[in-house]
Amino acid sequence: MKFNQPLSGNDMPRFGGFASMMRLPTQADAEGLDVAFVGVPLDIGASNRSGARLGPRQIRDESRMIRPYNVATRAAPFESLQVADIGDVPINTFNLLKVLISSKNSIPIKS
Image (tube, rainbow, N blue to C red; front, side, top):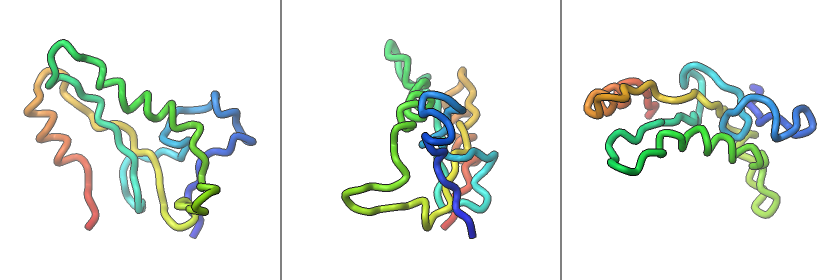
């Protein structure tokens, strides 16, 4: 089995290309994955402190510099786990209760 790998800086400069977590491939759902990155762009429960809704996008952008292995620990998770970015949870920007209920039901959890 071939595992997903982050896009190499040799194939595309780290400042270019699409924005996904750690420059991993994207897919529509968690089918066939061991690990899935999913964002929840939500800040409607906070007053006078908006901005958390931009967090998933910014984290994906900042993660472009993360390497696929750790030189010090020799950890290489992409050699044994199928990992992808499945995007953001769709949210209702006007109803916090509906967001919490729909988010809970839209992310499949494997046990």
